[in-house]
Length: 129
Image (cartoon, rainbow, N blue to C red):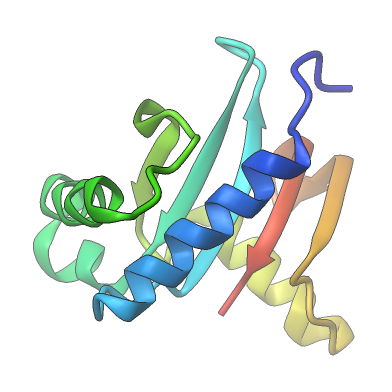
């Protein structure tokens, strides 16, 4: 089980960022908090088609630009943000689970489970598209 606790405030702040990104036309397909055992921290994983078109650096820059503009200021650490491809293995695995079982994983907490070949110690899923 994750040693660092994901607080409801962090979940709410993550949703504020996702809403701001969508309002800024930076489409977020999938988003989740994922606990990373090394270095024992939470990462807010965001996927966007921009990643596959422009690369991770450009996508991360766009996300940070919106992050800095959100008012009142977001109460999450910008270093927790991770921009990944919609084709990232974990995201693909979660998408397959949704399709296979006709589920919507939005608002779901997952703990101590494998998704495809990826171990999830703890995660909070906002959306998987």
